[in-house]
View 1 (cartoon, rainbow over the protein chains, first blue to last red):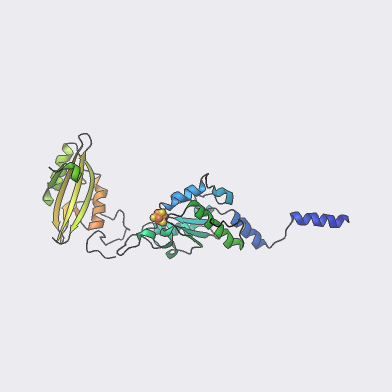
View 2 (cartoon, helix red, strand yellow):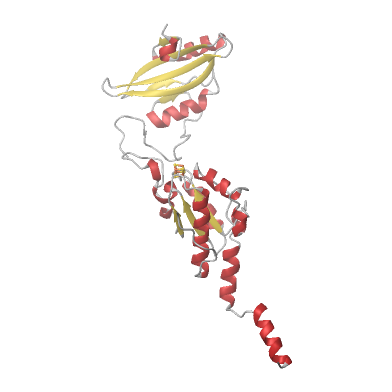
Length: 169
Length: 127
Ligand code: SF4
C-alpha cells in the first residue's frame, strides 16, 4: 500500500468533518447547564436526579449553575404562583441565548393539582410566561423521567439520539 | 372551659371587638405566646370572626380568643403593639378575609401579590 493512502485511511478514523453549526450543537447538547432553582416538590426529584444514584453527570447536565448568566437550560420544577412568576420571568430573561426550557411536572405544564374553580394564586403552566421546549409529565416525574427529558432536549438540538431508548418490560 | 382532647384548646373566650387588646395584654402578662391569628366568614349571619390562638409554653395551656364584627364594617384594633409577632398574622388575615386591623403599622398583602385587592377566603369570592 502506498504510504499516502495508508495515512489518509488512518486519519479518517480520527478526523471527521462537519459544519460548525453541527459541532456547536453537539457540544451544547453534551453540556447542558441547568439553572439552580426549584419551586416546589418536583425540585426534590430534580435534586435526586443530580445526586449520585441517578447521576445526571453521566449525561453532562449536572453542572447546576447558580447564576442565570452561566446557565443555558431552565428546568422549571414546581408550582409557579402569581407572586413568583415575575421572578421566574426575570431569571429567564437574564439567561443568555441560546437557552432552553424544560417544564418538569404537571404544575409547570398546566398548574397540576392546583387548578380548580376560584383558583387565585397559581399560573396554569409556565408556557404562559415563555416558550417551553420539553414537557415532562408526572406529579412528580421520577428522576429517570427528567433524565429522559434532558435526552429529548439533546435530540432536539442535534437531531439525533445519543443514547439507546429503554423500552419498558 | 372546653374538652381539650376533642377541640385542641383548653379555654374558649368570646370578647367584644374593642376588648381584644385588653385580652392580649392580660394573656401577655400571664406568659402566653401568640400562635396564630386567622379569620372566619359567617356569611349567613353577615359577620366576620377573628380568631386568636394563644399558648403557654411552660404550662401546656391553649386559649382561643374570638371576636365578631359585622361584614359591612370588619374592623378590629391591632394587637401588634402587644405581640409584635401578630403583625404578619394580621396582614395575612387582612388580605385573605378583608378584615381591617385598626392601627396596624403596615397592612399590605403578605402572601398575595402586592396589588391584590381581592379577599379569596371570603365565602362569596369568585376568581
Ligand atoms: S407537579 Fe406535583 S410534585 Fe410537581 S410541584 Fe406540582 S404538586 Fe409538586
